[in-house]
Image (cartoon, rainbow, N blue to C red; front, side, top):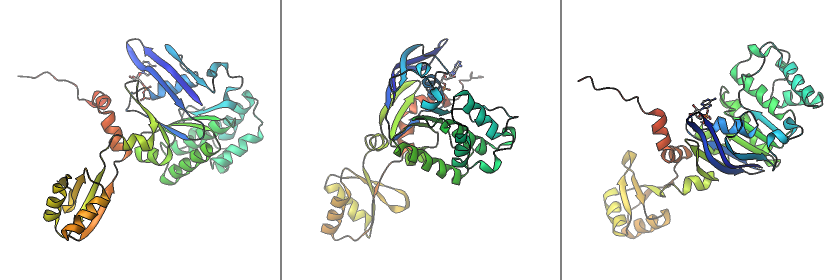
Length: 308
Ligand code: ADP
């Protein structure tokens, strides 16, 4: 488990991480979401001791990273896949890490096999594609067989097959009881991989919950309806307290009553239903809405002087 309490990091006048408290549980994949510049990388660097908090604490199973006896055997991290000596082969890169951390060298071939790099293990890392570098980074994170794993944008540069492979790998590692903390800007991928979520904006906590709760608690249940007589059905639904609005392709978008009730109203009015679909907002839609303040800040156009 990763425990952050009042975690804060200032760079001069910039507050990169602002009084963050959250827990990352064992046995599930926890997604770490936030717009660009929200403080995700800074938080991850503080978890593994690459940055010192200005204030607050973060611990791995109760122990700060710097106090762990064999850190790589307890926490594995992929933060920057390209941060590898380009002249080394994949195998010699991993062997150097293994030697420095008293990890048996046999483990090097094991992790090369897990990430599918056995055939290119002797090739210079400088010649690797971004996708291959990601796989090597994942191999490095797995090397010490750690219980806690951090992945910052692990699927960057991977093809769809590679992305699906990472998803299965992370879920499998979580199922073994490990703690998996994953950042990604690919929302649909996150929705398929993570069970829990930590969402931040401008360094502050926005949500610490499950993906399911995050989506359902910030959306209005809506049903899309098509029928033989949309006008008559809309009138009948409104008469029962529903809110009805036109949707794409002549569908009706109905809120305030659920799908079974809509079916009953249609039956009572003698109108044949052609479609009755509960619509679920996507993680991306909810995320965009919840972080719109922080997004606006990040993407707003510079203010220009009026020439007149
Ligand atoms: P994210 O990973 O969510 O994109 P970061 O943690 O990289 O966000 O950055 C958070 C904020 O801290 C940004 O405003 C960024 O410019 C600032 N920041 C990050 N690292 C440094 C640094 N070494 N020096 C100064 N400012 C930094």
